[in-house]
View (cartoon, helix red, strand yellow):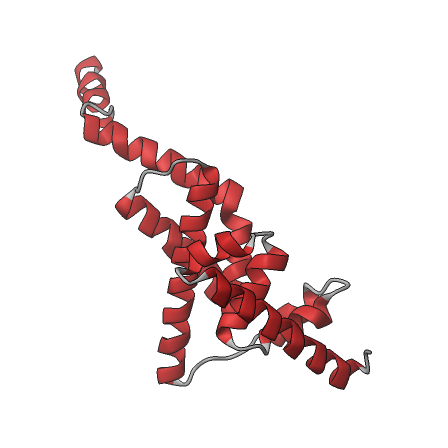
Length: 181
């Protein structure tokens, strides 16, 4: 009996550097999930407008991290990488849904999770993709235009233009829908 337990412990204990590396990557993935999971989920939701799809994007983002395990300089670099991957996965999912014509909004979940500014974020959803990305990352995530440009792999001037156009479009939408001045 003792021999079996020794054999099992020898088999189950990490013996190689690869096992230790895998454990470290898994631990980092758990850390990133705890620290940045909400940001990734919110970004995915801003694209997909569906809680379940957004959760799947979060899972896929973490799977891609575990698969590639890129080295990061700091937490900001890690967050930017995770958000960029989540944005790309979200865009791919939108394209897939568009081709399959199965893109549905889940209005009941949106209604349950509303906060005081939900009408503004509803208006943000109607913006064009680049404007919506810029508005979300700037106001919801708190990134500078330079950081947004790096995350989206675009020129900073393009990001500023998208922010300006997005604000103008939001103003027009809110003025029309809610009679704001």
